Amino acid sequence: HWPIEVEGIAVDVFVATASPTGFDSIGPLGPALGGMRMRSYLSPDEALQDCLNLARGMRYKHLVAGTPYDGGKLVIIARQQDFPRGSNRRQQLFQIVAEHVESLNGTYITAEDLGTWVDDIVWVNRFTRHVCGVPVGGWDGDPSPYTESLCYKLLVMAARRRLGSSTKVADLRVAVEGLGKTGGRLAARLLRYGASVTVADKHPPAIRRFLGKIPMEARGRIAFLNPDWDERDDRPFEDDELAGIAFVPADVYAPCAAGGTLTDIVAENIPADVVCGPANNQFANGSARAAQILFDRNKLVVPDIVANAGGIIAVHHGLVHGADFSRKVLREDIERAVTRGRQILNDANRRGLPPELYLHRELIPTLIAERS
Image 1 (cartoon, rainbow, N blue to C red):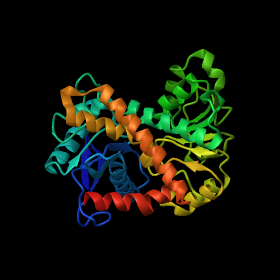
Image 2 (image 1 turned 90 degrees about the horizontal axis):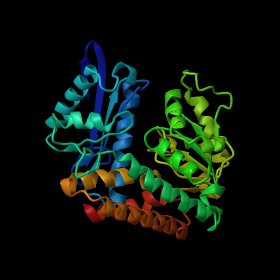
Image 3 (image 1 turned 30 degrees about the vertical axis):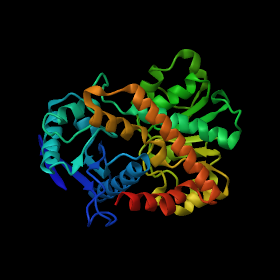
Image 4 (image 1 turned 60 degrees about the horizontal axis):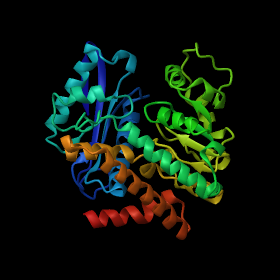
């Protein structure tokens, strides 16, 4: 925990990495790699728990993706409006955070995440070597296109698996929660290929930015969670309002925001047949009960550590290959991740387990044993 003050604004920073006494006491599996996120939290305790949960999820994601790292995460409790992009105050904050990361001597490698951007990471890289996701070899350092690419491919694969092999993207109704760097791209691609999309985001400016990138001819296939929403309205949506996106009539629910949306109540009532999105820790409090309810209702959930692994595959390529970064090789690795996701769903089905429970009860313990 690093308490920081920037121009009179108090900021708390938490970092979680694996260690022999860390979150599950099995020892580190490599240097901890995970993004730094910046968002408002209700309390430091909530931020700390989020950091620990995200770091644990990163461990599992690296194991399943085959990237040679352990789980790590850094969270900054701060409001974006207090630290606008490009401001001196934001640079001061990230310089202090970077110096703390450098003091960890490579046990934690940071990257962008929710609420942070490539330009933040480029600035951080001035003050610490232990960073990935910076521009190299013609790549701009942004992992979100690769996060979205893998998620989209798995979403379509899962939809055809559940709804029929002849299902076309244009046949799909998709509820997308969160229109940030990855969710906005995912919704835009679905629209480009003819899907009908219901969208929701906590922040109206994010909705407006998304709409600004959508051709007018596709706008007729966009519905808003609140049909009375006006583009001039700047009032942020409350969490309980956003929760309604999981209940709209849809074939696919794509959680692309902060996570924790798959509660027992959602599992019991969600109309969508497929859940696939890039949000981390989608099951509220890791609810095994919600996973089982969805499975018993014949709902297919692509585990988030599978669906959102494209980003870590991309930053790993940037870290390892540097100036020799190859989009072709990276695309091949993304296709291998699709195959791996299909195999995980096949194996879970053969064992009669929800994919989420199969991962945590069988596959991940096996992968940990192999790497330890």
